[in-house]
Length: 121
Ligand SMILES: [Zn+2]
Image (cartoon, rainbow, N blue to C red; front, top):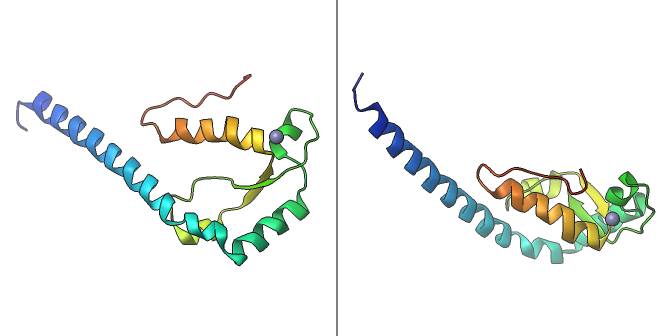
């Protein structure tokens, strides 16, 4: 084995960081490529079906609150993959839950080495 292990590890770390950054940009670009799917009749029907079956915000329900849901949210990231876009299960949420905790979770998950913290414990 070469003795300059430290050098190689550093180079690998730099490359890993670059790759993580490229990966993040790729995912962001990919997600914007599937944004148009939200305008399709197929999505509107799927969204309406989700809200009909689960009309209340599931995040508020966990906190003992009863709030009408207005958003059919993908339960995990589809990263712009159209197959995942249509197959990932949905959850019903209200706008404040979607704009607050959920987007904060997604941002935290997207940060390399980030720690996901749930507000309020
Ligand atoms: Zn809510």
